[in-house]
Image 1 (cartoon, rainbow, N blue to C red):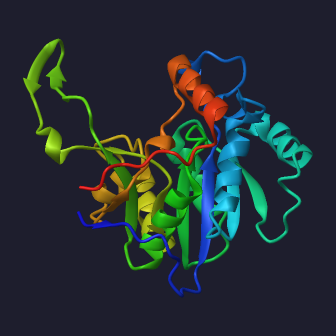
Image 2: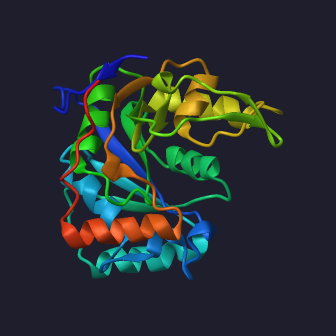
Length: 257
């Protein structure tokens, strides 16, 4: 897979539409509310993710994927913060499904055009720098059909079967994948249609890039950012709070390879 680090937006008329996934329950965090609505020093994870999309200056529309029982709350929350008062970047709310792939498919079906760039982002990656968002969008606008931000893996990874180690992949060939992931709308729609039409696709699409790989679409890598980590466990939330207490997330860079 190729690598690109360009953060500029090419002269491309296609709209960039961000789907922000906020329909999950996030049980591993142990919070009393769904994870997207957990407070991080005065702002929810969802608010921070949506605002990052707006600050990136490449996104033309935002679609928040939210569970039906939280849709009114999500809309009220963003309205109370003034986030919905920016007509230049409209925000819509679409009901998500039980699984992440269901939510994304619902969002794709709500897009009212045939040719666009789609960014799919986990609201739990609430400290993602706007520059990373622009980098992913720029790579798709520059010609890539599917783009993922990646960072090197620090730990040795073992492949296991039961309680036995059966392999150790070379760490130099492994990358941790983040979001937003970017796609050509038509290609992502086609992959989703094939996935949901298959009686047994043979795998569970835990991210959208894996679905594109399954559909035979090349996936391009761009440089990720440590700040785009996913808030999943209480320890992750402790880290996020510490970072926000110290400074807004602009302070780390991944070493170039």
